[in-house]
Amino acid sequence: MRPVADNFDDNIFENTKMTFGEHLDELRATLIKSVLALVIGFLVALVFAGSIVEYVQTPLKAALTDYYRGIIRKEYRQILEQRRLEGAPVPKDLDAAAALMASQGLVPEEHYVDPREALEALAQAFPEAVDTSKLPDRDATEPIQRDRLMTLRMYHDLAVDPRVRVVGLSVQEPFGVFIKASLVVGALLASPFIFYFLWSFVGAGLYPHEKQYVHLFLPISLGLFLAGVMLAFFVVFRFVLAFLFQFYSWMGIDPDPRITDWLTFVLILPLGFGISFQLPLVMLFLERIGVFRVADYMGHWKIAVLVIFMLSMILTPSDPYSMMLMAAPLSLLYFSGVAMCKLMPRRGAVFERSPD
Image 1 (tube, rainbow, N blue to C red):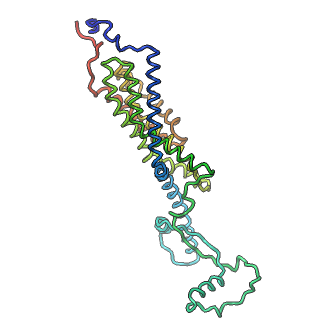
Image 2 (tube, rainbow, N blue to C red; image 1 turned 90 degrees about the vertical axis):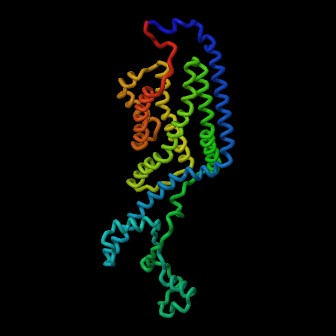
Image 3 (cartoon, rainbow, N blue to C red; image 1 turned 45 degrees about the horizontal axis):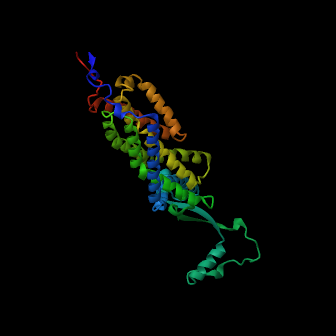
């Protein structure tokens, strides 16, 4: 066996080598272009940042609605139970009836009403329907006593309930939220260009036979990033919010989320998912340039899965749902990376060995 490289000039890659200073210049140019792309994306996002802020509140408002539907269901269950104790007719299955009533989104609330004042108001509105002559006289100077009032149950729509709103606690908070939303959307708009600049920087330091992988990795890298972001926003948020709101229910505390805190959460979690989803691409790249082999990946898969779970704990909030929803796809992506290393076509390398 002898290296095929012996048949080539030792200086075949001499023109592709870069000095340390040239690498720094290339890195500086890459960072400048990436920042410019981010600034342009930010300026474009300013046009519709308000709509984005409204849109990113959707999963939070849905979680708040589900949380208060659960509370309303308990309240209806108590109302029906009280009616049953009073001898009033009630459905046989109180839980099913309470769930049906809660699904309509009507929030029960009790008010105390003075019967005389209520009838006097009705008499003014419908004088022919109410006879006030039979009402007992009452001294107007007498203070109202609670035991003389009657309880009147009223209902309002959960959709307009102030508890399902996302609040702000400072004067400057809406402006800060507007800027943060623009940055997030601007980063997403600029991500294709930023990925292109970063992979171009990587390709500048590669040999010609290795640069082919930059053109292959760029669309895959962008697709994996967007897949991680969408998984976090459309799937993970729902489970994470449901888990976190359970503690409010258990502790008897009503949630009152701030828009600033929520937007920060929206920023961190999807970015963590998008970056972590680059795993199979990184594995393929390292295997193609000879840093690792497929046998190395398979021989240490248990350690790799352990590292994935540890990183998932760091990159996600402190709840088991978000950790598992990141660790499980990443574990699958790890083995997908191994499959990519085995199945993707390989271009013959210069240093492959051939028989004598």
